[in-house]
Image (tube, rainbow over the protein chains, first blue to last red):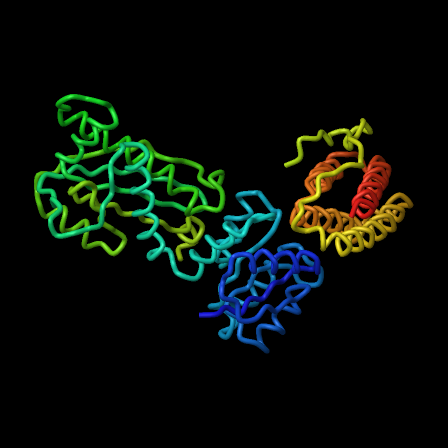
Length: 283
Length: 125
């Protein structure tokens, strides 16, 4: 799909640079449209098909917030995603903007990579992205931290009966939890690799999974938030054991869960992410 | 962020040399547009500042000054000219902190520094 993008900024130079950065992402853009302020943007929105609005906040005549208000109160424009691009850095202000209906926020200046990441979140939805991210983050954590090799998922891998579940949460502009579910045998393997332990006991196995969930959280956070400074709090991971095989089935049936194959062991991960401001606003 | 210290704008202290700024290679073709835009904003800033000094300290003129500073910061930030972005950031803070009668001198000093910096940029392109 090619995207028609409306860039709203009272600086023609900034509009030009934003366009250039987008072009560097090799994103499929159908048409670039631009406007000097919110009022002009609303006119463009009524005359053209726009898939995404990138807007500054501080503009004469009509600022970005007023423009979003007007867009959200009009049937034709209320579902068009708006991303604010500004030098504004107060987290309270950004939370307000998200509550107003702004889809996301990008701090000036930004790199093509940051823009690409944002577009994936905005256009592809959080659920699909969470699946990819969780798998990617866990794979990276296992390979770099625990010296384990991740191989393609197949039917021969060991699906655990006795499981250990570790969970870590974070809050800020985005709130979420990261959960890892793995077999006890796998957790012992993890303890051997991370802690160089011989014959680790069950407690050491649970601790190893907690440690892994901590590292995985650190790896994926920068991928799902604009800045890690936007994460206000990360909880200490905890873990619990389960000897009921149904836990694995229930966990992996969740649409946000994904499974990877680590040297023949099935390991599942689930990310739940939501916009805190939208949640506060009861959306 | 620039590692140069621009806190002197708040207390009439020393500012780093306006010459010799680092310009990102990939925006060199836009520097002409940049200089034109900043110079136009500096003209507006000077007019508003002189009105402010002469007694027009109402909301409209104050907002106009803040809007110009914010726009200069935004453009510098997007073009990657960190020194101008940083000095403007400090100037925005100083404007809020300083007494009303101290603001015009600070703004004119800011304007002179940016003018020098921009002419340095355009000479080197």
